Length: 346
Figure 1 (cartoon, rainbow, N blue to C red):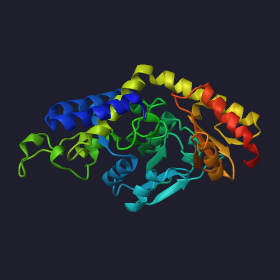
Figure 2 (cartoon, one colour):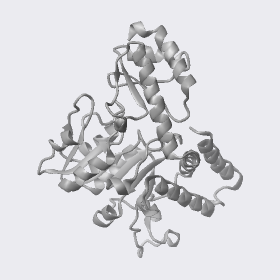
Figure 3 (cartoon, helix red, strand yellow):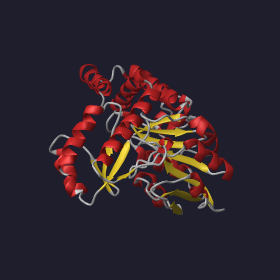
């Protein structure tokens, strides 16, 4: 969590302690400010942005909206939040198999059948770090008239996303990880066309055009993504996300992206110089902040590195090492130094 995110979350709690909910109207204004910041980050309209709590909740919402539309095509390496909601809600889900840990658009196209109506894919694969070309995938969806759904959690905040240019219909992501806002903040993007075409499957008092009326008999449901914020807002998480967005904006997503790719490539070079095998994309356009180092002793290595205050994850075929914009060359050197001491157990 970034200090800017923590500051805004704490600000809410301090205000609640001292003033109760007297600042409610101001909090609602700050919620709208956060919505506008997000819309600028992904080139969307504020009316297409809805706040939730995590990616799984967002993906469940999307799957319920599209109930009965048809078959889902997704990728074998997806994190379960991309797949379980669709399977649980009764969709027929088919999987594209990777080729050398990659999902080239031309390979995905081979799996499309007349029954395929929805494509679900992660921007960045959590098991391999493979980053999808969102625009090329969007063109594929347009060609076959597929509804285009993206899980952006492993890329949002450090990799550029333009939902209009890419033709994305729905996108869900968490403020955790690369967005640096911690647990509790999630976002769903719904394009205006999807909002016109499909009904959001639940609503509450905050979903109406005039929630302050609290009218049980005469109300109008809003035709925008914020209708999913059906009850009392989760203000502290939304404000923490807003604070994180301030940090990202102050640096610039282009600069962050370039820095992360540079660090990822530097990390790969130094790991391979140790003689260790990695899983990495062939081309920079598919590179992310994630590098997988192959090993059969991932859990033990995680514990050993953790004892040196080096935090990695057990994922896929080994350990996942993630470099973000707050990392630097010294962090990589520290990792390499400690990894060199235990490389014989890889």
